Length: 284
Length: 152
Image (cartoon, rainbow over all chains, first blue to last red; front, side, top):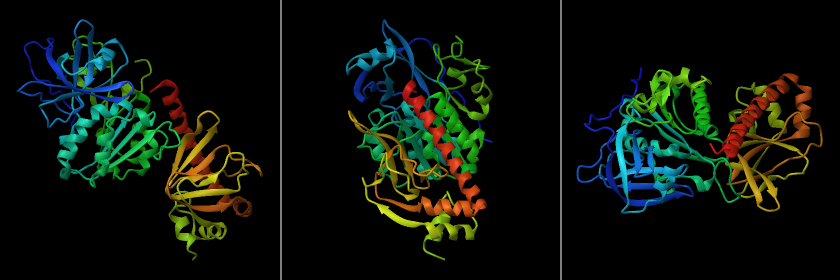
């Protein structure tokens, strides 16, 4: 039985007070998505893969954003942000030298450490690759501990693919297999076209000995979980990252409540076994 | 045993069929390799063949005057391409183009249909597999439509 991810939020005296950090690098990923690297200062910024920060644009507001950098590199705090509202649009416009307020890290991590000896499936849809990227970095840093490592990633169109350079680099390794699909493409695309689940039969893994980390739109995660369960992956080793309206990050305000759980504090990473009854309820 | 029998037997569409059933299918079948960009089927042409994809990748495309070919879905190794049980002279509604070197087994429909009529047990087996494959393709296409229409 796999253990449930547990929150690793450090205790702090002023949990609601953001620290101001400068942007040191900005990379445009797609038409509406940007990756910002912040300088956390000489002490660095420790986090576990799958955790998120509350990012503040002063005078405008605060949003929860997954940390998408390498947890082995404390010298840079990296977030990938899609411009969907006023705060995220403002974050995406920031350039090096600008300042961002940061509270965190919050939430439960992908339980990479507990999966020794297992095959690892990392399945992402759209922006869901951002919170999974730290998990993959950690898996690759400890590569010899695991069996097969398969990355399955789907985006709407080829131009919506995140981290293209890294995808190529990961593909170039001999110890990880990367499968990429899109929902629609022009005639110059040579890869698969179809939803993420169509790639699962092409991944090599031994279901009873597999742990899966899944992040993406709700519909995608629901069908992906269904496929993995049908193939025999145990539900307690299928981990999903949920997105809800996180506001305080501390489990106090209740905006992100899902049944008896607070996604910001008890999640965002849960085993499917723990959240399945709440995920299938339509009234929530 | 012919050379094609083991190739048919290992394809998911034919897996676990009885050796005699594989032999009967093999009597109809032939192998072919398509080069990248070579066309397997063209929209508007009569459907004369049923393809079992052994390796490679096939694009299903619809041609539009303004934007050229639109890639709708791909079929991969282990998939089938084509239709069973349609009326004679049915037409392809998409273009099928190899995206890379693609090896297939081809079952010409006149031969295959005759076989299915003569051997209803084999016919039922193949139609069942065909229906299951269609259900998978439709389910996946519905999710694709949701993704594209609603930006998920």
